[in-house]
Length: 296
Image (cartoon, rainbow, N blue to C red; front, side):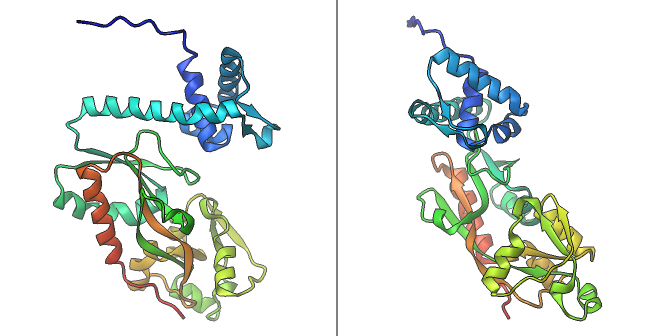
């Protein structure tokens, strides 16, 4: 009735997880952030795994490590294995209608969450769980999908569905614009660490040269957006995130918005079951309802 199996001794599960995360993210510090440990702990685990396996998994200087042939062979198989474990455990704990979605913080706070009531009303059987997706991440362990702003180069991938084009432009309060004589570029510039090149990207798209000016840094786009609404400066932001603020008159965009080489998109990470298909279709519908970005 039961089959007996004898497995060879396996390396530490923590070491395998550390290597898989470091191989996927490319850096020990990013793997550490994902796993909730220190980057030195990740490095020690990977070194212990190399010693247990008797092979090098990374090569090169510490600031520019690359996978060896052995590392490239091991990483994708471990990733599939961990995904299967997470999926199996989740299926046992639920009735199969759970949907786990990773989403960048600013997109979650300023776009997705305010609309989720409509999704819940239409699909009450779907138990949607949102998890924060780090700004650098292009995938999430154990998630059914991720939602983020993706570069145009990714939009043709089979698992990716774009649901809203991305336009960016500088916004500020009407009062602050008046205070600076109608010159947006004279206002303090609000920046976000998660989109540090926002002003430079917009300037290139608009064909303007940014004059020297004071900058006020914030950790996330939604922090910079709230600071703009508070009148602290001007911020370059995606139109889908600020559309309601501009339409309500709390922010203005005298220089308009420029089409960026990106879009709001959802990328499936699991087989497209009913819940994921419903969520994806709803995102496309919500994206289509976003008013067009103003241009100058």
